[in-house]
Amino acid sequence: MILYPAIDLKDGACVRLFKGDMEQATVFNDDPAAQARAFVEAGCEWLHLVDLNGAFAGEPVNAAPVEAILAACKVPAQLGGGIRDMKTIGTWLEKGLARVILGTVAVENPALVREAAKAFPGQVAVGLDARNGKVATRGWAEETEIEVTDLAREFEDAGIAAIIYTDINRDGAMQGPNIEATAALARAVSIPVIASGGVSSLDDLIALRDCGVTLDGAISGRALYDGALDLRAALDALAG
Picture 1 (cartoon, rainbow, N blue to C red):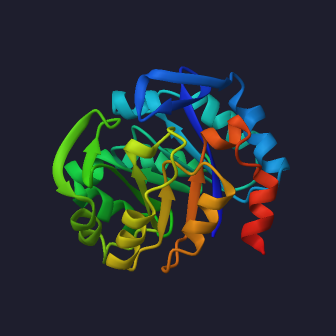
Picture 2 (picture 1 turned 30 degrees about the vertical axis):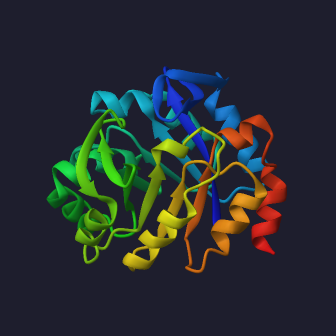
Picture 3 (picture 1 turned 30 degrees about the horizontal axis):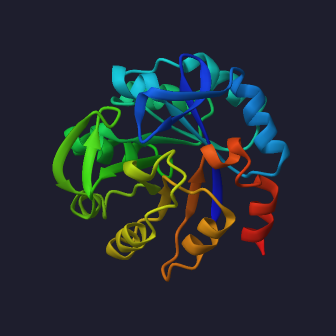
């Protein structure tokens, strides 16, 4: 199971939100590229990047720090937030991203997801962000009545690389991941699932790894910045 350190970008800085609230942002590093290098030096194999401003704006906003991270680090990186058309997808992949994450557009224009997955095999993931099992969009500001598993099944034959499942109520709250919901989603589809939201300790990672169904990976942010989760120790444990 891959551990993805999260770098969430707001106004050019590396931050963490509390339950997706842009008004509750804690700045952890004003040099995202330096933060990315620190994660890579600790041994991470992937980076998970989010353009928080972009998620609300519907277009890339933090392009400069993302490009700085790509220039500074040679491990693959995936990015979500404000990526909602084929031109933006193609531009980011040309700039060196390994994978783009489509969230809002997966709800509002699922045909685009299919088109992108076909055009860029292995480089398109879907981000499913949920509050109480229902998908939320546009930076988690808008809630729908769509069940996570129902939307996930729509992409079963689309050829997407992964589903990133975030429980919004757990995100940044240091309360542990929603293991039951994550495992249920992974059982419902054959698409690889990456867990996100609430991963706050080594025990959380082990519980996800041993949840009874194979998960592709887990994303952790605040716990790595707060020191509650030691990245090197976590990577060693997962490798073992």
